[in-house]
Length: 317
Ligand code: AKB
Image (cartoon, rainbow, N blue to C red):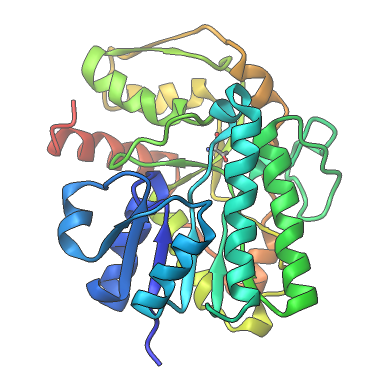
């Protein structure tokens, strides 16, 4: 049977590009985009779209029935910074949406679920360098608490009800098509837009704050690869550590200067510094590499080249 795939949160940063990548692989009609707001022109034009509240289980069920959906990618979530501003709302969205979709899988309406976790599951007591897959996890943000709890719900539904749910702990994801909004790692995107538009960027993290990061193309490839892996190869049903590169704002600025020699960066750390300081600076993703052959393609030099080129050609600034 061919797959019918529902993306919840398709108008967001990852949802947008994942939808397009899946439409290329499975066919436009087989990938139903949905979100609380409409997506960009390409998404709306290229395949089915439904307005949907991620916490409305009955609403999701009616779409699942309408399109005979087999897989759900649940990407709707409130990220780390916004969640600190609206803790209860973030908890409700991040948790209720997940539990609703897991229940649909438990009730056999769908076969497979993807749900993103994050490096935010770790906290300041976690080993910072080369953070292991299994380690101390004491997150200090609402977002991190919701991601850690969500991972354990995924594992529980898998163990208890046999639900085929898969998850990745994303690092900061760098992309140019759709801006993220509300994340601590967003500086690594804003910096390119400001570099091209104003030749300068004031960073809200300190110059030596090292965080794990990844280019969107790698994140999308990893997600699809994990979902297409044989069930027996998916040995972890919490969330897989996933790594590509790590760098500091100062190192990123140096890379940008190779293309824009007059670029200037200044630093004014704010409350987001504390969140970043509680997260790992690099990640050990041996399990993902071993279990389903994960390999990243983009390093900082390649990401910088791609970001500057695409932002310029698409005339986004
Ligand atoms: C955030 O900064 O909140 C996200 C994340 C690391 O999950 N990009």
